[in-house]
Amino acid sequence: MLELRFIRANPDLVKEGVRQKRASVDIDELLSCDREALALRQQVEQLRAQQNGTSRAVPRASGDERATLIAEGRRLGEALRELEGPLKELDARIDALLLRVPNPPAPDVPEGVDENDNVVVRHVGSPREFDFPVLDHVTLMEKHDLVELERGARVAGHRGYFLKREAAIIEMGLMQFALATLGARGFVPATAPSMARSAAFTATGHFPGSEEETYHLERDDLWLSGTAEVPLTSMYAGEILSPSQLPITYAAYSACFRREAGSYGRDLKGVFRVHQFSKVEQFVICEGDDAESIRWHETLLANSEALLKALELPYRVVNCCAGELGLGNRKRYDVETWVPSDGRYRETQSCSYYLEYQARRANIRYRDASGTVRFVHTLNNTALATPRLLVPLFENHQQADGSIRIPEALRPFVGGMSEIRRG
Image (cartoon, rainbow, N blue to C red; front, side, top):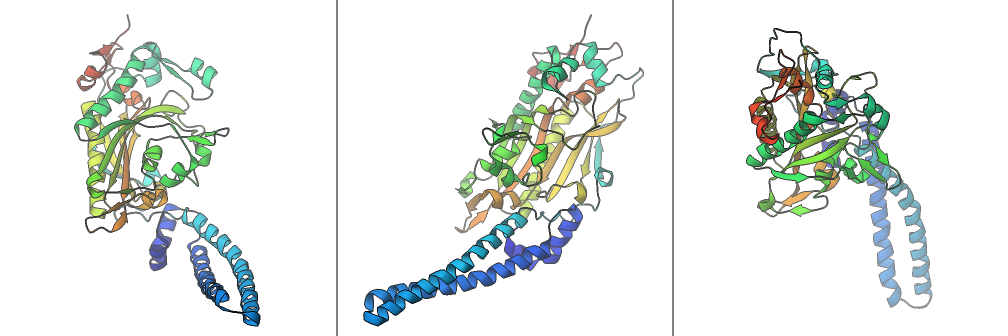
């Protein structure tokens, strides 16, 4: 959430952010409500001051003067009530509008509408040239009896699945591989709840706007999260941290859920786009300094790249255009891994920074070296998500004889397994 004072001082900048992100909010309406609320609040404060003065004078008055003061107090009270109702409604409207105001994109975010306008930052590794017919991940997994798609859909509905045999071991191994790698880089390994209250989704900027994408447990009024970013952000909600606590860095595992409400007809085959998945998320809370946020943003990206390099997967990094950014993203990199059967790069990781946008919503602050209380900055990044990563992993490492090679870096986390082979 942006500070209202910032919006007042920079209306054109904020409006440009609304335009670039195609957000649904009227900044002129927000500022009009703000001016009206400021005028009403001034009247309320004046009336309240008069009311307090009258109340203090009553005990010292006597006779007719006392009765006059009491009557004046009642009049002032009624006048206050007439103003406080509209003021409360205005404040609620302002709060609702503020939740829809986007974080303006960073200066180096490209203009654009969708993923076709993203700008490639770099390619790492070259797509493998196969001297045999390439099998897609579904054919490979069914060949080795690694997945149950039809039975999964029968049990869990559309996009339901079971992973079996080596695929189940590799999924768990990938999570352990990510936690161990990030732990060695100073991130605290953690597990995070998959359920959270709506306030936690509001804190990250997912609500309002993504309710349709999120599973709601109505009986308990809880929501299933699609990322550990949601519970981790609210883990420190309402707290004032000390400088010695910062930066806070987590590598958190969680089971994740996403309705994929806007993806009908896309990736219907296989396990690339599913409703339930596992993920290790990198998460950072740092001091409220722009340069520090940018430094951590590049660090998180480097960590994700290190994981893909270790898994011997070709990938590219793209700077996402403004139209692809969420409301809170100041900037986002996507890491896209090569999928041979598709003949293209597919998004497997996403890396974002928010400045104080999320911290204001969650009210997470810290006391800096001078003793001033300020809002922290937050960042997050997908380390690894499965079963999505199984798609490029299996396809890129398939062999001519139908077996699937396991990269050396992963083998210690899958019981030393070096390949998947049947027969």
